[in-house]
Image (cartoon, rainbow, N blue to C red):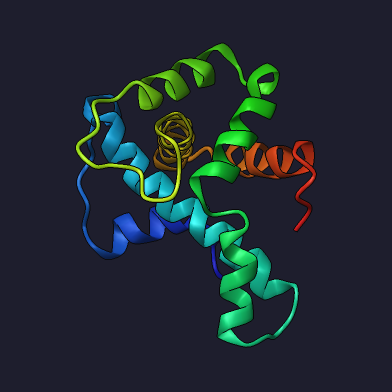
Length: 146
């Protein structure tokens, strides 16, 4: 039986990634990886719900993977975050942006980036259980069941 290690550990082992102090990373770096991990989780759940055309999979996914939906989730999760998580969210939300939101208000974009920074930090520190709990609870609280 193969030993169970996380995807993050497998990536680090396969590509000989060195140890880093995650606290030295910028909030936008955490948002970058957080965006990807959030997208992967939502896509995984959508695919697990049934074999569909790529177009249908995409339409279902973008209901959750957009700044407006993510901003609503973070508003709904405000009282569910630990003190540390709330600080990480604010850290990402208040980052200096170098791009403009395409299909969202500046406020929505900032809240979504805060969420992505929080999720990225949780992922990079191996706290995937809490990461999944936040996403699941956020979706439930805004009534967007997958």
